[in-house]
Length: 319
Image (cartoon, rainbow, N blue to C red):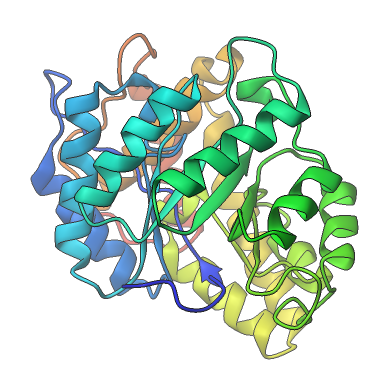
């Protein structure tokens, strides 16, 4: 599905189901895509952090993206993460994503080496010039150790390099200022950065971000309850902020599954991704809840606690 307008709505970062050998479980991935589309999502973000992209080989990345694109079959746009350390490596991933049918690209700043703002700008411009797909910047300083400044995002939005931003910086004040500077609520199609989308990755404050003027959200736990995030978004669009807040609070309680058990003390990667996958297995969407090595697998004790969170949220379990 070609992106001919600003991207809005719920765009979950699709989990990557693995089998017990650590290989891509394409059958489970296909069911997950159907689960998300049935939930009413507006797009799919394959090969992001929640997809465990950093743990996948290039061949596995291609398998994931090809599966998501084929199962989605044009019903919603598919954004492909092309996350890697250098411009050359990111460009190679981008060319692969284009050949596999992705509708847009998502890239971070280069990382491992220290990078200046001018180098980051050159990175995004070269990528956009090389592969003719809409490009979204992914601001996640906890992983790449550099923050995309508001001035840089505005510059790249206004010159057409970037089609949007996925903000996972945790700087909600900065995100609000950026939204205002780019044209404010509903004004970006005619403002200084036309056709630019601002998506928040802060899934626990979606109602506040939408009220501030964000266009949508990329919620990891949206894998588990996509329909809940769609209800929140639709309530916000309708101006029913009380209903949006009520749905947000239910999702906050559901998200608490990532803090269960001993894995929660390990920086949340093992606990969060393990909890999402355990929940999807309990819901009958995927076959195996394993995460990629060397992440610690969720304990049986923690899975029981995840099941309790699902029941409290009103989500039916089949396992």
